[in-house]
Image 1 (cartoon, helix red, strand yellow):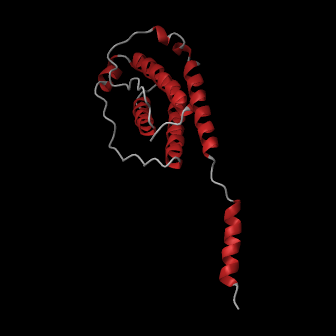
Image 2 (spheres, one colour; image 1 turned 135 degrees about the vertical axis):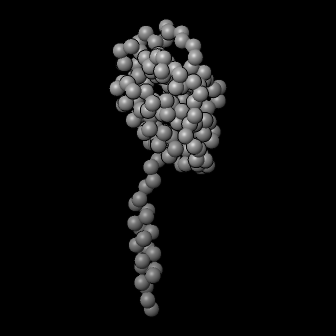
Image 3 (cartoon, helix red, strand yellow; image 1 turned 90 degrees about the vertical axis):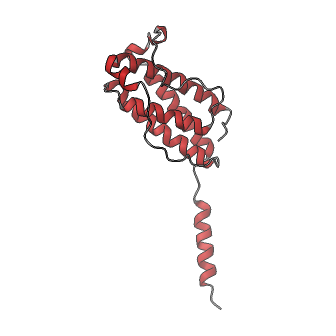
Length: 166
């Protein structure tokens, strides 16, 4: 009587029983913590303290308010902001851009653990108006982009509290 395959199976089962997947709650907590860190980081940029008083037009290419944020809408919107931030030459947005990339990865992982389908690969984001705004006022583009990103992150944080749909 050979017990080899049964013994291997039992050893494998024992090993696999000790391996734990990342709990969804931990993933949600990490995502929320990163969002809070990003909001604080944006708020601490010196010229961002007075940005809420600015009223600048011509930034229609930036995503606006969405009453219902799904995981896929969050991912799409973060991709747009990421594209804009990497095209701004300011040193103030470098860390925010890195944080945004990490947030995209966390959100993608959170969506996949919730059983959401992977977003389809898209070509490069094309934003009409970004080039002309950048040519005329980089400072305004940076301030408005960071201010709207901060607002979006705060909306996203609220939506993550109620477990958004796919």
